[in-house]
Length: 366
Ligand SMILES: *Cc1c(COP(=O)(O)O)cnc(C)c1O
Image (tube, rainbow, N blue to C red; front, side):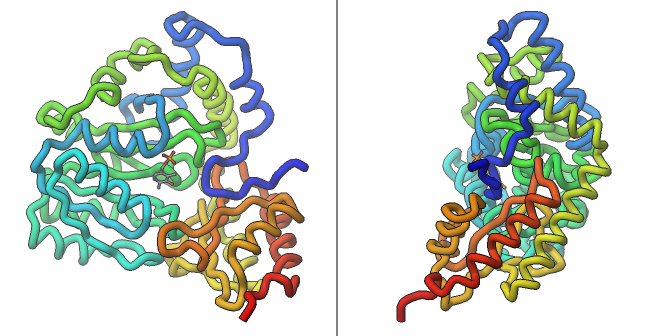
């Protein structure tokens, strides 16, 4: 049975994208590959809102988070990390592991970070960099990045602002240049309807200034190497050639649909998921006004067994959703609706969920 893969990454890949990725191998130092790379880089720009070329890195989203950290920070740098879930915490842990002086601003999970709280944190802690998560995949919350960057700039105009856009860029509006973000990263298997294996980063001119001062150890993730190579249509090391070709096709589809139409589709489908979930009598984990249009976290009623619910959706209906992470394991499940997602996928998911919920065997033994 063809699965309705509704985890927040990896996400489904259209047939044409899968085929593009399965073509015979080519020389990654040859002219064919350079043409592919140039097209991918050009087509990424409007989704990052970056005039300069985004960088292509081979790795997962976590690798891209690490790349962001090691390219613009130095050991001992005072860094404010805004944490509202598992991925914000991971970004802070990486910076901590490389020796940054991390101050965490913990935001209640399921809510968005507020500009006042960030301003208040910066008054007490003169950070030279701030770490933000655009879309917190563990809770289904989208943070308002431009509002947060304005608040940061008002207090620390020269701070380097790092944004995890792994589960947002490509699906939700993003504007590195307009929002005054310095480093933004993403991953191929989330909103880009491509297989896992590539990470992307966009860097502002302030980000490049930070790069020239940064002293954290780095080798594989060096932005300058990636940038110099990218300009020539190459990569410093052997890239995931098949994934670059898959992304070429995925980006053709996304560009053909149009950036605004891609964002509008995600907004419409996000709303349809939330409406469908509440119509089934279930509660959303995220506050509705900050609920994400790429991933929805759903509370599992205390009377039901979350693991059984997830298992029945998969076994009986071919619908694959994700469990909660960290302390939310067992109390929520998460639905991915980014990248290759159509209305009929969501209708099928909601019908399957309705069928599973009507099954008495889901009730916990008391
Ligand atoms: C998935 C995800 C990551 C980690 O990406 P991997 O590819 O699993 O390493 C980081 N941040 C966010 C917001 C994510 O959704």
